[in-house]
Length: 112
Length: 115
Image 1 (cartoon, rainbow over the protein chains, first blue to last red):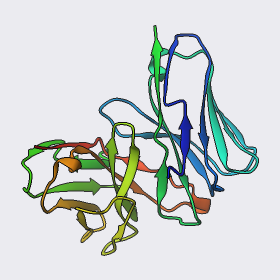
Image 2: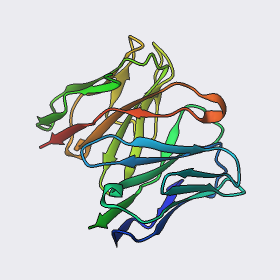
Image 3: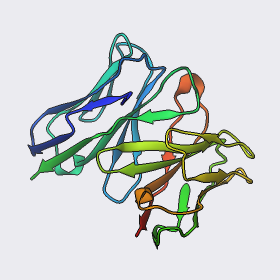
């Protein structure tokens, strides 16, 4: 059973388009993080959200945490080829402070 | 700034051989993790450590052993490699944050192929 469901699994768009990817669970998150991974590298943290309903913006990226803290979304405005990568959501579930569980990721390709 | 360093970066093994992956971090982090990443499976936790001398099992621990003799190093061992262990292995470290917000810092990965 996948604790964190990410959708879509693959997304290919043209430069300048907007997109939204999702991360959902039946469990309540203590916190949720979004990472981006480029080919041949390890994931790098983009943002952490901790409060239900929280919205954070990072340049053209907007992150939203659901009111019930069971889901999150990442919206990219005017996507650029440099946004290409694997977007992973990760959460600490079940009250543990130690183990970060990852979703399977959304592989985004932005074509010039 | 080295951050998290993994060695080796590439390795090819034959079934039944043993090997050790080394992870070193220079950020004085308490928590360290080993993940494996397979196509379509995301990152799955193998083992983790919450401090020097401690280890614990993650989601997929079978066939692996770990040791954390020094705070800065976390070793992942394969005693008898199997083709199912062909994967990219990532080490990560984290300082425990308030309200579970600590950032995970990853190495560049170690690509292991078992023939």
